[in-house]
Amino acid sequence: MVLVNHQATGDVCTLMMCLQDKGTVVRQMMWLMDHIFKYTNFGIVSLIHGDFFIRQGRTHRDQQLVLLREHLEKYYRSRNRKWIVLFPEGGFLRKRRETSQAFAKKNNLPFLKHVTLPRIGATQVILKTLVAPQENGTPSGGDAVRKESKSKGLQWVIDTTIAYPKAEPIDIQTWILGYRQPTVTHVHYRIFPVKDVPAEPEALTNWLYQRFIEKEDLLTHFYETGAFPPPKGQTKAISREMTLSNLWLVAIQSFAFLSGGMWYCLFQYLYHCLF
Image (cartoon, rainbow, N blue to C red; front, side, top):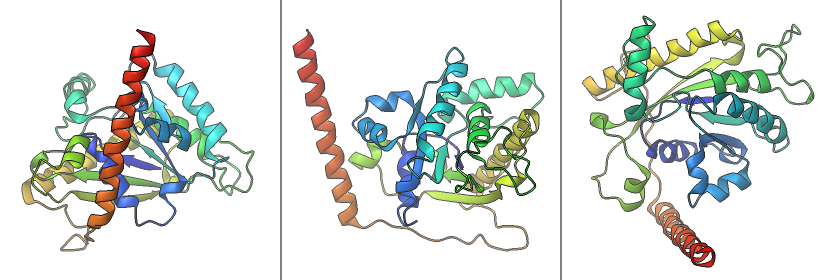
């Protein structure tokens, strides 16, 4: 399970780029994304791929968690998925920061500027549904699915932190049109065995809060120094530069323009037919 902080629509592009050289990861991955993306030009691709579109808002929350569980049980194992990507904050930083800070103040929680306090619902559903029973026979994820004995379930939690220079995130429009100067986006990874993640709601909430408090510290250090802090016992953070080929980028951008144009023409056609 990949947990990612969320600043802009470009976070998805950044993460996809990072995963391009990870073998079959992209084909074996399921995404959780806002339902609005269902109506974009790549929404139909995500639907076919079996991704889940989640509707935000308190009035929809309980129903969406039920739908998420049903979706995971129906598609995750049947399509041989092994990775799932989740943005636990439940929205962009700029939209949720004020509400998150007010909640933190009310509940005596840390004041965060670069991330928001995560929501627990989707994470809990994923762990309950996809974590297999442990060797001692006790499910680490509560009522974990036991039907697929061949599947080991989720094994790891990858805590991913995306940082943009000067705290200026990149959106999808910028990726496609390229109207900003080239910049280097930094991505920080930490790995936790899923067996070390608590199953009980209160303990899981505290565990997830702690991860985002640590993200706050990572991002504060990054914005002050231009780099993530090194691990304990090391003097410098180990990094690997990744650059996509120009040919690959041209192909992707061409597809984006073409599919966007086709999507626009389809809406125009339906509009004239209906009205």
